[in-house]
Amino acid sequence: MIEKADKPQGAKKKGFSFDPSKLRPPQTYTVKAGDTLSKIAKKFYGDDAAYMDIYKANKGLIGASPDNIKVGMELKIPPKK
Image (cartoon, rainbow, N blue to C red; front, side, top):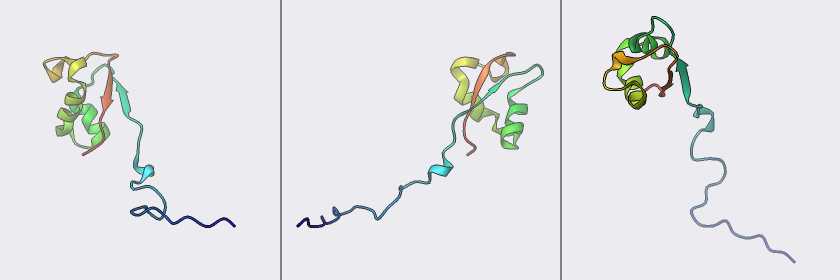
């Protein structure tokens, strides 16, 4: 006869400890003529002041100034805070 094993102590009943539906793949945006980080932030976050979040996520690509974006750059768009 096979006996049913007890559940290990501390084991959860079922499911994940996080909500996988809230996971999103990283977004990217290709810079177009006339774009600024402020305009891109307004488009994605509804707040042009959030441009620093985009700048910080792409500083290695953009360089020392947020004004250095160039047409064709592919920027990472971090999740909204």
